[in-house]
Amino acid sequence: MRVTADREVCVGAGLCALTAPEVFDQDDDGVVTVLAAEPGEAGRAAALEAGTLCPSGAIRVVE
Image (cartoon, rainbow, N blue to C red; front, side, top):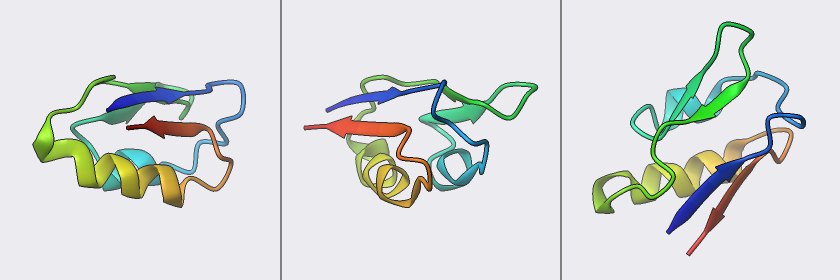
């Protein structure tokens, strides 16, 4: 699994960081930061859910 985030598209809703805090965080401006581009099995489900919940479509999760 590979996780990426388009920081230019991010609206700072924070659902990614709340859903998968081991994979995503937000910088001081509230913009997404990927902490684990290749999350382990423990972060897999949460990363997929965060990608689904992202209101701006900034999160991309590729199997």
